Amino acid sequence: MALAVLNSLKVDDRRVYSELVVGPTLDDPTDHFKEELVLVDTSNLANLYRTPEGTEFARFLLERLQERSEAIAEQKVLLKALLRVLARRGVVLSPEQEAELRGGTDTQEFYYWLERAATANSAEELFAEPMD
Image (cartoon, rainbow, N blue to C red; front, top):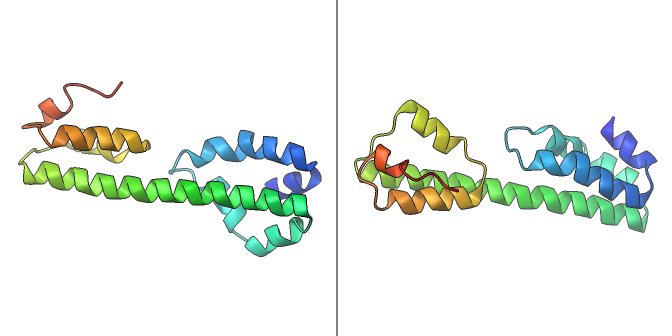
């Protein structure tokens, strides 16, 4: 459905549509609908965008997906490192605290927690100063 809408729009409007509809959702790793929209059938994308403008737009969408995919991969690595540092330091997290860390979606937030984990002696100390 969304691909049909995109195909019916002028090239300039496609970029706006993607920013409004595709862009916000890509920032939420738990919502894969928009990623699937593009990735379900890449041959369909190729057929829809055979013009130079359409090719540019398809490239724009795929670059956004690649950037988001890389950010999610970095966040997973940081989360693993964070949990390992906490375990190595003997910091025990409650299920709720661990869920809070696992629910993060901001790379800078993971760096913040990792830096705090390096010196925290308890979960209470880790969470004493939430990120602004």
